Image 1 (cartoon, rainbow, N blue to C red):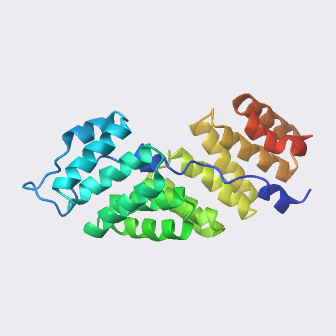
Image 2: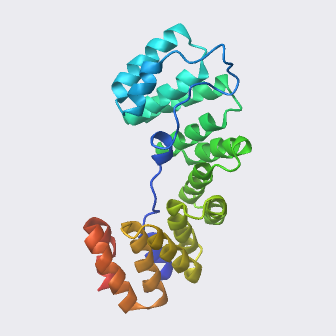
Image 3: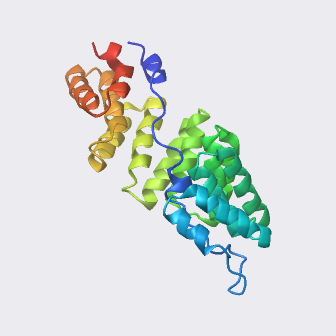
Length: 249
């Protein structure tokens, strides 16, 4: 079996946008803002918290008519656009937030996430590296940087980014899972297996972790173990299992 060919049949695992909408806190003020200049859209914040993105969008657009200079309103508008799947507009909103508040780490991180969603991987990496200057312990930014590096084929840099995320939070399962993928790409089989096993322990129903383990066992020639993982994978995600159907026979 051609090990390199086998690896190339497997997609890079892990979601990209979770940090953009689900983990990015609503901004009530940018770092440069003062108590005398708060955001003026509490209704928009409530809508955003309740995932009523269209209503939040309208509220922030109205608020920006009064305070077009407010970076936190552009930031929250970006979250609303992202919630609606309008990522190019989300990107533009985060760019405006960063333009008005260049050292705002969270805005830079979300700018990077938006670039990543749009497959603009080098731009994503550039924004995320800037974000980490201001948020050096932000797990999500290290994780997303690892994804950007991985998508560009920079697997050693991706490994380092995922490992840094795990130094900050050893229980960050997406980083553990993608660390396994980086090790596969680097042909460091045992380390890949260890990473995927830990990812599966952290989240036993994660189909991608079991996919990684199945690939690992195929690589080292342990077909009984690969068959066990493949069975588990089929139970969790038949479409994902189909990627290995021919190889597992």
